[in-house]
Image (cartoon, rainbow, N blue to C red; front, side):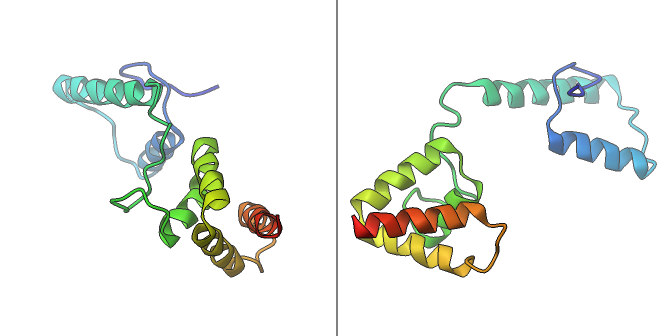
Length: 133
């Protein structure tokens, strides 16, 4: 069961649940004034509307990056945190550009020793396969 906000009754994200539990365990009371509750309700409605909007997940915005090119940081971000749409654009770039393929191989080589970095192992194998074909 997904917990919901006691004020607006919208489902809470994992981060919001963690913050709520942390504040409860720290002993902070959650007695908000009516104005604060109204402000929190409005913010939650905005967040949930952005989550539901079609196209919100179509292109991945990379953390702390101001461009959408496939730099080393962007490729690392797509492999580590990306979803299907971001992976599809990276796959097209690997097929199209040998420079991107080389960047993927160099990023994945840094994580080759970690048996739990399965995404990086997958992309390393994929980029090597694209090199041979």
